[in-house]
Length: 119
Image 1 (cartoon, rainbow, N blue to C red):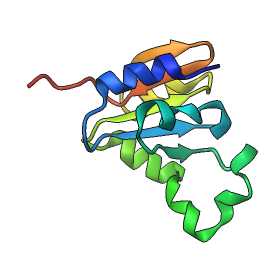
Image 2 (cartoon, helix red, strand yellow):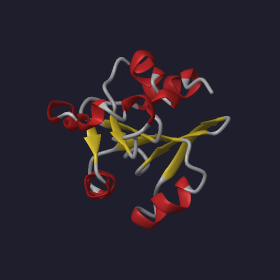
Image 3 (cartoon, rainbow, N blue to C red):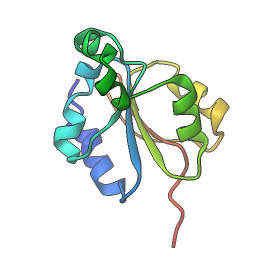
Image 4 (cartoon, rainbow, N blue to C red):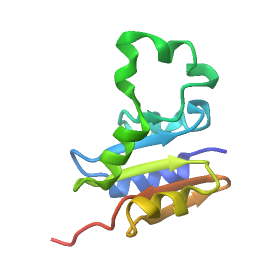
């Protein structure tokens, strides 16, 4: 269940200003911050080890709602999603048909909302 390999892909892909989002139980993806050195937003993760802390007013900034996630994913900036949700790709492609898979390890998937634009 380690996210180390996917974090390596992220380190190669990630550019300043781009956002990492983890979906689901944070403990399944907690290593992503360690391996990338970046803070990730949490989507659909208000349970598990974060359940009680997620309800505190000052910690809610790290969590994104469905509406906030949709705004991020459909925006012009590149966003990465680390998820273990089985139907993730089809759900994401309903929002952005150009959603791409950057990697998979076991049940963990790494998606980007669009391909990198060549400069």
